[in-house]
Length: 224
Image (tube, rainbow, N blue to C red; front, side, top):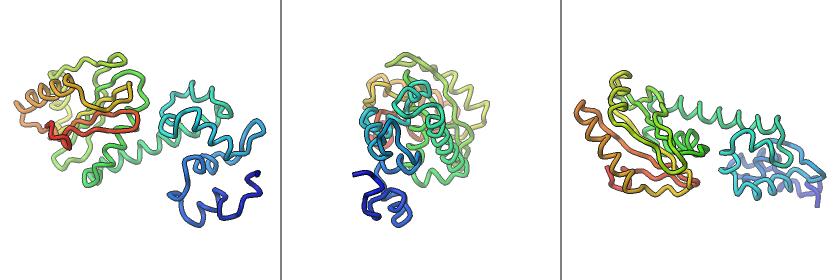
C-alpha cells in the first residue's frame, strides 16, 4: 500500500502533528525530513531500506559526507541536510554545557561527546575543559591514533589546562571497533592523567569511552 493510502493516523506527518516527534520511529523521522522517496520507492520504504543498509540511524548519522552521498537516494542535498542537523545538535549541546546546565543531566554530556567522537574512524582522545562552576570552557581534541590506539601525553594535558585556566576536566575517547568497554590501557592512562593533574589541584570528573551504540563512564564504573 502506498503511503498516500495509509490511514491518516499512521502517516508520519500526521503522527508528528498529533503526537509529537517522540512518537515517530527512526524511519518516520527520515520520511518527514526528506518528504519524498527515490527510484520508484515511496519515502517510508526508502527510509526503511536506508536504515537497513546502514544498520540504524546512529550509523547513518556517523557516516562521513563522501560515504553518505554514495547511499541510494541520498546525493549531495540530502547528505548536507543530515550534516547540518548533526552540527545544529552539536552546537545546541555545547551551548547547554557552556551555561552549566548540562552537568545536572549527565546524558547531555554523553550525547555531546558521542556527537563529536562516534563518527571518527580512528581513535581520538579529547578533553572538556571546565571552569569552577563546571561550565564548558572548551572542547579540544588532543591526540589522534590508529584504529585501536592513540598516544596520550599527560604533560600536554597539563599545559592545556593551565593555558585555559580550567578548574576541572572530563576526558573522552572513542573506540572505532564499536565496543565501549574500557581497556586496561585506558585505565592506566587515566590514572597517569589524574596523577599529573593532581599536582596542580585539577579534578578529573569523568572519562567517557564512546562506542558504536554505548558510552561508558569511568565514574559510574567506580574506575576514578
